[in-house]
Image: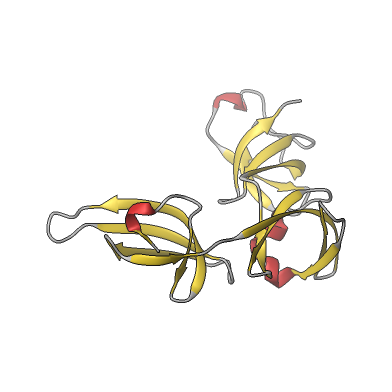
Amino acid sequence: MTDTSDFKNGLTIKVDGAPCIVVWFQHHKPGKGGAVMRTKLRNLETGAITETTFKSGTKFEEVTLKRIKKQFLYSSGDDYTFMDMENYEQITILKEKLGDVVKFLKPDAEVEALYIDDKFLTMDLPLNVELKVVSTAPGFRGDSVSNLVKPATLETGIEVQVPLFIKEGDVVKIDTRTGEYVERVTK
């Protein structure tokens, strides 16, 4: 058993019978009443993120996740095929089971499959991925020092807001938790 004082990002607990991972937490002591823990939890079965508040000292059952490295091979319609990095076994997973993960997948991307008691839950991406810009409006001279943004379509098909100095062919780093631009990658 674990309680709110043990919270840290990445902790996996059972909330109302569902396995959830702590995405964000904050200890809060209002002027009146007892202390509370504000949290953002991601349900590992549905992928939904909820904001929840718990009283300090609330106890939870800790869940042990098994993480297995997989490599994304290809997609065919709504089927996504991954290969186990240890035994080279291939598994196919439906797009709806993966959720938002598919927005950041490109061939040969390495991800971690999350299992509880040998039951597949979801894929866990690295914090940042590098994707190539395939289309965006051109930037103009003098735009390199502004904080204005423009839409850009990346190689996986997602659209993100990028600074004006980003052009087609650039590789950008994207935060997989928020889907936001982090920085331009120079090689």
